[in-house]
Amino acid sequence: MENKIDIRIVVMVGGWVLVGNYSQQKQSRKITQGYVIRQWGTGEGEERGLGTLAYMGPRDATQLDPIAVVEWGSDAQIMTFPCDPAKWVEILSKSPAPVGYGVGE
Image (cartoon, rainbow, N blue to C red; front, side, top):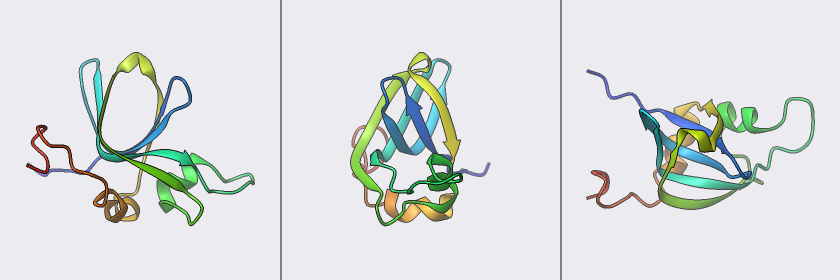
């Protein structure tokens, strides 16, 4: 079975925006080896925002804070944007790998 990378931008209740390797099981969601998106850096305009980040990857003005693991219940998630893995895999590889989650051990 193919191990598909599922990289997503996740918009959370309270305004948090995350990006990273996404997984879900029943009511639980998780981002590993990801970032909090502190500033989108996409500029202003009709086609600028999280969708731009999802398919184009981080821009020069995008500000990211690394996170190893974040877990939450499905009720804390507002929406997700599937990302182009080719645009995100290099930057995500620089985020700390979580120890004790079967990654980075």
